[in-house]
Image 1 (cartoon, rainbow, N blue to C red):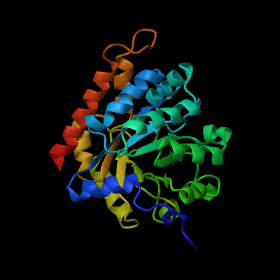
Image 2: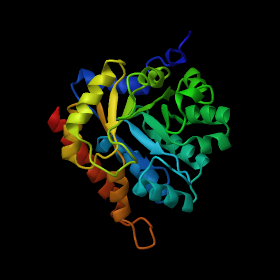
Image 3: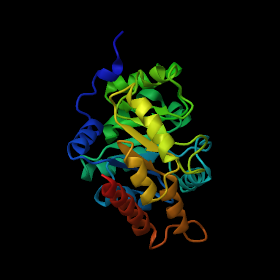
Length: 283
């Protein structure tokens, strides 16, 4: 059977970035921030400066009212964004504005299927490609539902990145990886985001098992908060994803009524730089 993950993928931005990092002996920093948190303009400013701060691939959360896989910090960021008027149309517009100035850094939209379903799958895929999106992580669409979004997205040229978890056993793993492209996101803890610190030894063993099943890069995330943790995980994985720490740091800079302050942008970018330096020291 033809594998759509091999069609229209070519040398995508995500593949180019991981290939260049591998050639240089480096590991990827993959920061996550929620689109529109705490407002569109502040979010766009941070997004626009992430590459210079050290982001190799950027994950943008699509705000949703019921982000079940996310911990309290990211749930709150989603609600702040929605309260500020963020919509799918604005999220794609944000990517488009970013892409007009930054042609190389890959953008991955991460979130849940409901907002995409409401927007319309075909329209979403077309508009995401037009805006400059490179990949999707949709946490509540299992492989059994690949016909819904995954296969159409792959055929159109978007990478579809799947999550593997500590409970994904060797029997389930081939199914999870069948239509995965770009990279594999290894969830380094059980439970929701940001609720525990990953055990480096356990993560290393799990990544080794994953690499027996796929040649794709493996990015580990969920629970990584400090440059030291990022460095330790990057010694095992091809990249490190950091979300809760960045979202929590952003929250700490907000005013009492949850508006951006003068320090919001610089504080978030400073943490990104520190995380990148931690990863760089370990490689």
